[in-house]
Amino acid sequence: MSGELELLKWIRARLGRRSRRILVDSGDDAAVLRIGRASVLFKVDSVIESVHFTARDPLEKVGFKALARPLSDIAAMGGIPLAALSAVALRRGMSLADAKRLVRGMERLEVPVVGGDVSAHEGPLVLSVSVLGEMRGVRPVLRRGARNGDLLLVTGPLGGSRRGRHLVFPPRLREGRLFATRLRVHAMIDISDGLARDLGHLCQASGVGADLEEASIPVSPGATLHEALHAGEDYELLVAADARTARRIEREGAAVAIGRFRAGRGIRLVGRDGASRSIEPRGYEHRFGS
Amino acid sequence: MSGELELLKWIRARLGRRSRRILVDSGDDAAVLRIGRASVLFKVDSVIESVHFTARDPLEKVGFKALARPLSDIAAMGGIPLAALSAVALRRGMSLADAKRLVRGMERLEVPVVGGDVSAHEGPLVLSVSVLGEMRGVRPVLRRGARNGDLLLVTGPLGGSRRGRHLVFPPRLREGRLFATRLRVHAMIDISDGLARDLGHLCQASGVGADLEEASIPVSPGATLHEALHAGEDYELLVAADARTARRIEREGAAVAIGRFRAGRGIRLVGRDGASRSIEPRGYEHRFGS
Image (cartoon, rainbow over the protein chains, first blue to last red):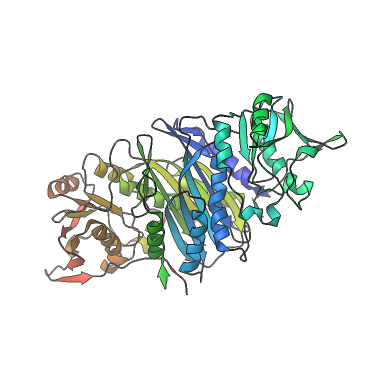
């Protein structure tokens, strides 16, 4: 059984750093390219019927989600989105009106869709959206950079994806930009695969471990702690910041502290009774193969 | 019955020119964005099993085609490709080895793939590839710009797509760059939908008509004139240039003249006997709806 991460790792290893123009490759939330004096962000994400949404979900929401996902990655670098492209494989029999519903959903995010590719086929609805963004003079915030002693913060409640939030979440662009500019953080990632798994990515990239405080984790109404830790598709930002910056972030209401980075490896959950246990950085990964 | 072009036109009309950063939108081969002082090209294209390739085609070739198609659009603007992103929906049961075959096919084009998105689903294989390119100090060559009296040239033989060329064509990046720099042309498009249809796009954007000389059109070995005119997926460049530039282009072997632009509307085919007839700008368009 092999998965998406193994494939992306293999591609990365073959790519090497073949061009000095590639400042950050596929190992972070978005690639960063140097064009002239600008740092340009470049990201793609797909949504697939029966994988990321159901055939019963309103098409406006499907279009919204398709663009909101890569925008969440632009947010997680601290960037500003510039433009998007959509590639759509429509289910045979879908109408022009259906295609327009997808576009209307994207338009709610106010990022110009400057091109696209539309086909009809004998298969499920597939939308891939690519986004270009820019840093405008500030450095992109990477996954690596969290330090021993930094606080861990999150921009909103977790675990609500199975109750429909995965179709309506607002990408945290304002917060991400704030964390790259005025309230500068050390590291950032968006939570797509689940708190435990994405925190695992942040820790691995930074060479640190982390303790999560159960009592501090904001859990979506109706969700369980387990869902907040592992369900994924929250699209909140997870950031590492020194204690002083973290206090300012909390004061401004942009995120709440939910734990602390420490030396070593692994993620521990500190319960309400003070007892701590290791948690696996598991969550969602696309698997394929035989 | 509604089609891709109607949808893209609708999207364009809604988009307007909402941002001064969008120099060219979806109405040309690629979008052009201003980032800092750079003109950045941005394009997506998809290939879908049973639409753009068959389940029997080698996966290396499928990967190659998926990246070569948007590269052909970068070529048609005169740009230099910088990086690509691929979004892949694998057929359930495809292995990691299959996914690697797709990537190896892309690698043959020597454009770094800096990220991607991989899922498995209960449907046909779908690959969408987005490409970023840059103009490096020269202006992008648009579809509009052909003038009454300009010669029409093409970079290679047409009509071979049904004999497998659509899986192995080389994107005309070197030629496209030449046409944007030293041998400056007035207008350019790549032939994806067929000579007649893409020439129609060029004429419409430029407000001119064109006469094609049947005897000059390079037809692929084994193909018919009808295929050369309408089959599509040639991915050769079609350019408009003044007579002097056209002679230089022919002398350097970069393209051959196949006709001439004229005032008015429509496309005429001038036969070997000198008689001319109108031809419809038809070719391939994805249609959907009921």
